[in-house]
Length: 411
Image (cartoon, rainbow, N blue to C red; front, side):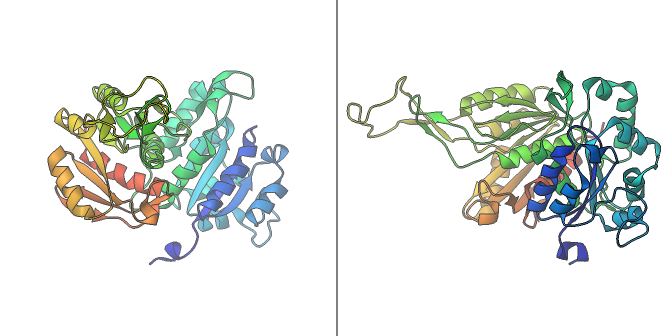
């Protein structure tokens, strides 16, 4: 076991001068909740939005705002770069993106980020006015950073501080945390961050389905959608066009994904098969009901007058099998949530459905059950079984997407 695995992951949080700087406090807390040790560097402009004292109190460490007079070291930019396992910029302003793209190092934050190159993964979460974001200069700078292996998280669309409703909003805090956690679990030197899914279109199903008994009752399961949404978040960070087909769940839409909400297995089948028509891959992560009531009531059934002794059920359409039947050279991944004989059931499902990969997890285990923030999966393919350790969901998603990227035909 390496030294890094024996200690908390080190994350450098670089805070820039934008109205969304206050959200960096939430990102810091989210990273700490994920088990990370966080230290902060800020621009002078950032301190006008949130004081350094706030970040010092939250992180428990001095904040680097200047190259001079930092307690403990005369070279804070080098020490922080050596210390970090990952660096994430929140919010990444147009100015700092330009500095990063052109190697400008004229303050503590930009100098520290420059020193991070080749030492750790670097991620940026842009937040700015829509016209600044859509400026050819900003888009060119972002493209340059992507080519160098920087992961870009967002931005999202929504109501901006300037009063406009458009793209430029900082990505959701949970998404920034999730993608950063995924980056931390890579062997950065062997597997640098790359946009290897750029231009690829991936359909991801997530969450449960609800099969109506009457207008207020339904048959469902305990799926929360967390694994599927983590896949969507990381796939977007790797450059994919993501079409997310989500069953009933309360999770926020990952930035930049094209989300369609459905309720029943029939609706999910219809939307997923249509979305797959022009896709390169599909990941069927949803826990789709195997059965649905034949004749759901059109009104709420009253126990006293309409006693329900039995519910006649019929099988739902098999989304995974149908996508595999029409996939051709495309990639289809399925999930097998089991409580016993995990690998035997997963291998049989792989053969029976015709999938390229089955992700198998034992939902009777607390670390891999529905709703957990971790998962312990086995990747089952015609080439054999790869057992992963228990990992945070974003890291599991990243490992699955590694396999998808390797299976996709080279363009």
